[in-house]
Image (cartoon, rainbow, N blue to C red; front, side, top):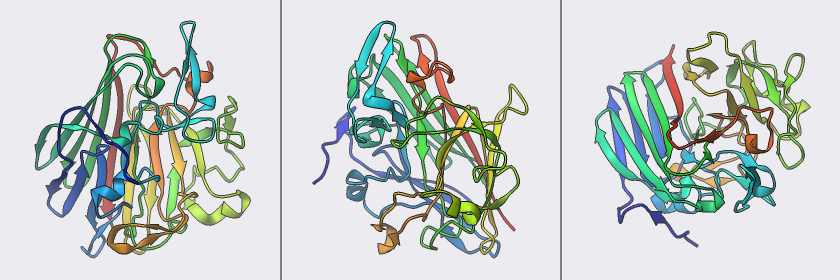
Length: 339
């Protein structure tokens, strides 16, 4: 059954392309979603390196958040509620009793407007209304995707509360497989992850409020190693927020370096955010994707730069409350190479 689609204007759902040389990206204004990222490997062979679907209708019925912008608050909010300035806000739960990625009709489920588009950039905009999914205040939101050079992609998520303080934490939920979206699992990819600490979670994947060191645990990727190398020590795989090391305050933090040996492709990521959700698609369960390929568990890796999950309920986490007159920005810069 197709979900009702909220549109900020009566706008059609379309596919848009950015291109520079052999580097091309397709996006749709449904959820401001990345549909494909096509890159050469070390031999010049082109592959699509993000998981996704062939048709917009499939994105409407998607439960995986393939390539979508998620918000107003990405990740989980415990018991789908929070208190702000003496008022308790009851949100719409969609993950048991908790809220996940902005609720059942979050930013990934709406039609965005296209503000501008040319060969190397596109900007999507959306007006989020007071009370949407239970959140306070009207918010003006935009997302810009821009190819900076032949091998760099910048993503800028921007939001401005118009009349009430509100939590904001947007994220890009792209699933990467550098061998190609249809190449199997990502367990042999190597990753170096620049986070010395994580925020542990309970059985409902809600942070406990602790911040713990990863040293000598399966979560320690300070030295590059295969994603699957210590997977047998975890129940399902990786799905946790890393506290990014701020090695050069005032500059972008380096998040991760991911490499795949057969293709020679490498992804490097930087951000201005304090955290990143490292997720190894543990919940993917034979989802039929592009070209009829079936995505099984661990078919992709997500690196969602973000504020810490459930920060609205943990005063010791960096605040996600943004006041009218303030601007929220989540910036991601990817560099892709192949050797």
